[in-house]
Image 1 (tube, helix red, strand yellow):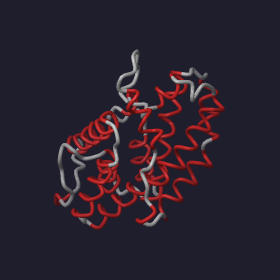
Image 2: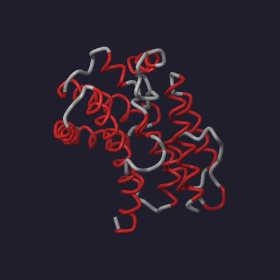
Image 3: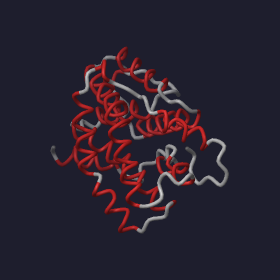
Image 4: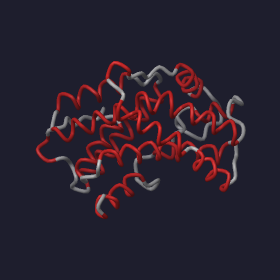
Length: 224
């Protein structure tokens, strides 16, 4: 990867990217509240399972296909995978999260004059975050494999930050946890690139339940 693409990728993966990722826990806050995640060890098990069951089998592969659609200028495929991803959000909070983040990133691309040329990709208020991120990656000419790895790392980093704040864990423990997730992130990235369409799955009933419980949880710090 050349320096320009690397710098663009670092910017897209930065926690300071103004899309609101820091305000969501994706049900992790409820897992902590209910005692399913209570220490660094249980957090490591929980996040590794999420990487294997969700990121490697659905979020990552869908993002990979959205990247391919952007590169090919295939608006129909882009719209199809965007719609499928939105349909896979089992709770109101999870759907609102990806739509809000997708809208914020799309708006940022427009304001930075980085919107894809030619208008090949559909632009609606219901663009999911992976779709908006795929547009950003293509507009900035970031290599796809590195972009997928960065997306999964950003997800893991945000989840670790939730653990640091809410379990709570110390900063060093949080970094140790993130470092320990590296093999799971690499494995999820490799699987996401090669999983055929017929093996894609968003089946994660436990996560869906946690997200639904979060909607009625009192004393919440996060929006999902």
